[in-house]
Image (cartoon, rainbow, N blue to C red; front, side):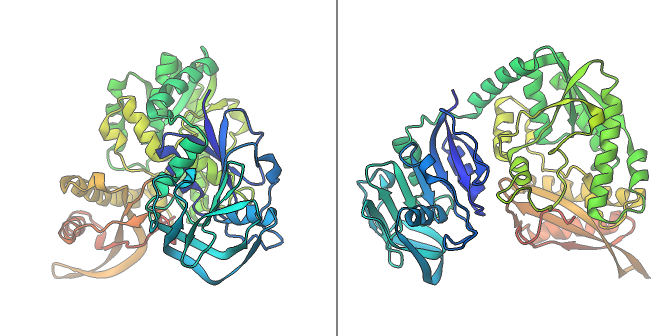
Amino acid sequence: MLEKIIIIDFGSQYTQLIARRVRELNVYCEIHPFNNIPEISSDVKGIIFSGSPYSVRQEDAPQIDLAKFHQKYPVLAVCYGAQYIAQYSGGDVQPSSTREYGRANLNFVVSENKLFKNINTNSQVWMSHGDTITVVPDNFEIIASTDNVRVAAYHVKDSDTYAIQFHPEVTHSTDGKQLLENFLVDICGLSQSWTSDAFVDSTIAELKEKLGNDKVVLGLSGGVDSSVAAILLHKAIGANLHCIFVDNGLLRKDEYEAVLEQYKHLGLNIKGVDAKERFLSQLAGLKDPELKRKAIGRVFIEVFDDAAHEVQDVKWLAQGTIYPDVIESISVNGPSATIKSHHNVGGLPDFMKLKVVEPLKTLFKDEVRRVGKTLGLDSFILGRHPFPGPGLAIRILGDVTAEKVAILQEADAIYINNLREAGLYDQVWQAGAIFLPVQSVGVMGDERTYENVICLRAVESVDGMTADWCHLPYPVLAKISNEIINKVKGINRVVYDISSKPPATIEWE
């Protein structure tokens, strides 16, 4: 039986980071919104309450029935969660005299307490709160303080309920990992046995049982997620997996042929479908990013469905959905605000009549890569930068034409090849060129030009939820710019995007 931790999400921006830190300690965990908590099964060994943008004093603040958890499971409450338990139990929470945001140091620690084992006075923590717990009930013991926060942590006596005002999941809390491990191992009694090897073994066994002798179709993209999903399924059902790779005309230069070649030695049943003209014709005249995404999604389903029908008696559609896709699609406030349409989350059109299997839907991106490494997948595939489902269509701002695609493919190829040659490709999480709907004056030879602008984007990230722009060396950027302007007809200016996520997104559309 798979032991796990449940993280109850009150809407904090850090909730996914808590999950990532728990999993880094080889413990499986799941995030559930406070207003949609499932029945707690016997394999749950502990509960973590997240922070929240709300104040516990607001009328519409998130609330749960604490009686379902208190004294029944070990609980670690973080920030809002700590304030909520204190107020619910008869304590008092008041606005802080000044909002406390940033680094602080513990000036008092009860090191004998299980939660603070191997954590000493002066340990740095990260605060982010506008309220402060001013009074705790008599059966609460304060186990840590800072200069400004008397109740930086408390323990409910005669229970396994613990609470902290700071955020252990951020790297600025220097002993945050130790604190989480203390909770998971010493308090919850977890074995730290959730590894990529264990995931591979259990997932293949589950897929064998679930799919039996049924046939499955999978849309390969050449990316990490679909590749790892394909190998897992192949190990479970062998030749009953049928992979389809659609060329939508929006891939990187020569990518269609390169991906098919890379997959040859993997033993997969794979069929390539050239549908470039079909996609480009449906994109003609569309400028709105969401309309472009929907057109591409619609045509992909039609093309994929045609190809899938050539396989007799297919029962399942496999998808490379990963955990951030699932979380973003079901949030604390119901369906997330639409940032963009996910290409692999949600219902299928009725006409496809297929059941869905998603072997990676519990994993973050870096976990998918670790599983791929365990499966022996080629490092060239595992190291590939994420690439958007709609492809270059959302890296061409405005309408998409065959001419613009060709220009962007050439510029992008020069960019990516230079990153590889400079030994920078693997240091960058995601890079790509963007075709801007802007023309500018230039001079080439003795002539003035009025041509297009290419923007280069490169970011550092772990899973794409947040990202920082890469500080690429100036000589490399200069070489890339020079080559693009000299070799790609129609481009006379190259710029570099130095925006981070948030507030910007990684893609421009």
